[in-house]
Every structure is written in C-alpha cells, then in structure tokens.
Amino acid sequence: MDLKQLESFVRVAELGSFTRAATAMGLPQPLLSRHVRQLEVELRQTFLLRNGRGVTLTEPGQLLLEHGRGILHQVALAREDLGAVRGALAGRVSIGLPPSLSKLMAVPLTREFRQRLPNAQLTLTEGFSVLMQDGLRSGRLDMAVLYNTPASPDIERQMLHREALVLISSQASDSARPTPPLKARLPLASLAELPLIAPSRPNAFRLLIDTELARLGQTPHIVLEVDGLNAILDLVREGLGFAVLPPYTLSNFPKPHPFSTHAITQPRLMSEVMLVTSARRPSTETHKEVQTLVAAVVKKTLAAYL
Image (cartoon, rainbow, N blue to C red; front, side):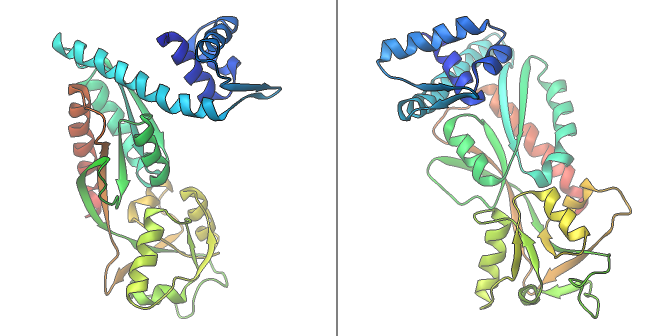
C-alpha cells in the first residue's frame, strides 16, 4: 500500500469529491483517480461510489478511512519526532475548540502558536464535545478543549478552569419574559419554571442542567433544542426563551448587548474546562509544547470571568 495512494483516498473521502480533493492537494484529478483505483485493485474492494454530486463511502471504504487516518497520523508523528531530533518543533497540530470559547481563544492562540512554533502548522476546528471526542478517537484532532469530559481509558484529561454557568435572558419585552422581572440571583430549582432553549443531549451543558435539576427532583422545561450557540443566543435575544451558558458566551455580541445575566445558586452549576488528548497515540515534543500553550491561553483568557 502506497502512502500517497492512501492519502489521496482519505482526502477524497473526507471532502466527498475528487475535484475538491485535487484542488486541496494540488494534484491533477486524473492522478488522484488513479491513486484511488490502484488502491481498490490492490485490496480487491470498492471504496467509493461515484455519483453526479461527488462520491460516497462504501462499508469497506468507511473502514479504510478510519485505518487510513490513523496510519497517516502515525507517519506524521514519526516525521515530527525525527524533526525534533534536529532541534526543530515542527509538523501539523490540530486543535478542537468549543463554540463558546472559539471566538475568545482563536486569535490569541494563533498568535502564541506562530510566535513559539514558527515551523509548525496549526489547524483549528470548532464543534460540540461529541464531535470533538470522535475527532480525537479517529486521529483528526490531536487535542481538544472540552467541557465536563468523563474519565475514559482512551483519553487523558487536564483540568484548566472551573466556572459557574449563568441564566441568560433578553431585555426585550416578550411573553417569555416573566413578571415580575427575574432577580440577579436565582435558585437552581427555579430553572424548572422557565422556558429554556438548550442544546440537545449529549451536549455537556445540557447534561449538567438535566443532572443537577434531577438531584432536586426537578425536570428542565426545554421549549426548544438548538445545537448552535449563536442561534440559541439569537432566540434568547428575541425573547423566545432563556439559556444556561458560561457568561463569556456573550462576548460574541457587541456591548452594550441586549442580554441580562442571572447568577444560579443553591447549588451553583459548576462546569469544568478540560484539555483532552488521546491516550492511545503518543504525543510528540511539538504536541507537548502546544498542550502547555493551550493551557496557558485558556487560563489567561478566562481569568477575567472568575
């Protein structure tokens, strides 16, 4: 099996198109097609089904994609280790960030990365925790900043920050706005009486809300499930419900913004920000340096919200 053939297959499978993959790799499309076909002939399987809109994976193709990502990742690690012997921290590092932190972290993280690792390449991916965990397992991500990640044999965790979630409401007048107005501090049990807009399970914030209210014998009143942070806040801004999120999520909006925040007490909803890596793949010196960098940026960025 030729590595170039394998890389060609992985890029076509990920991008869903020979045309897009050829552009991304800077290769002629006929050469890319030949690479994939040679792989299919050698392994006696059909990996891709061509159609007018691109390609779809067969069952053997899906299996090869999972193995191929891991193989290419290990090759990249070997190259980085050899580069480290020469004293250079190089290679590609892929980091996953949650939507609530991406806007705050992307710029300072990129600047620090370029300053400290000028010979390395950075890839940032934004997404919810479940997608990030899948990325760590498949090798698409080297590390991710996640919320409330449970212990597991296949991951390693480093706790970076503990924060209290708040209730976010709109200052707009709407039927969803309670009368009298909400107080600045609310007991957790009162959330069961409010129409909440929240991500669907198994989102980390949603699980935390459900679990802590269940301890009090309560069930959250979820009027709408939305798996998008900006969409949730847009709906709250229009007075269509309330959200329970970290206070820094409002940094996505200009100040003065049309929101009010309310502390949640008795008990507080405490969330943990963690740096998560795979326990099944070795870390290079580059990865270790970036882990230290990410931890420092998270702590510095969130220090203002303690």
